[in-house]
Length: 210
Image: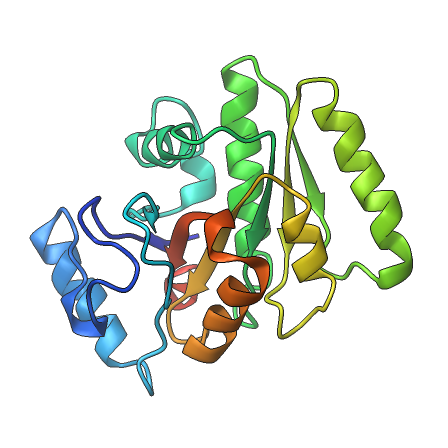
């Protein structure tokens, strides 16, 4: 999984497609080149709150590096710890890399394990209406014991259960796939779930993932 991210100064809605800031200049040029090749400029639109920023970085073979010694994963983990949550929705969809968001969630669970914590990952991408109650009960059971969980969901344009599921957890992350995630789909997801839920976004380049 290849992950592309902006630095802490880049906030949702504060820069346009061609102005992403990245810590490493060569990487910044590569990121902007990829973005400029996206038809229509597919890019995350997002909340304007100053506390909500892109949780992004560069990671070649990210899953292999999901450990507490890898600065890439350290950064993602620490940024998430700046907020108080026990349950979190990780929302995103990609046809080229359908398991991309799920893999990142499992990477976070691996980090939690190394730190002596328990983090359960639920794959609820294809959750149906009749199964929502059971899934919410499982989440409640985990959080009531002081443990954490991540629920992986599709964009709201692909599964209507995403909205109520995300609204019933403490926080959310948006997975943005360059060249795939449209402004319409990401904007609708943020608006329907609620801007206040989102901690930020993880920007992924599916074309580099394989």
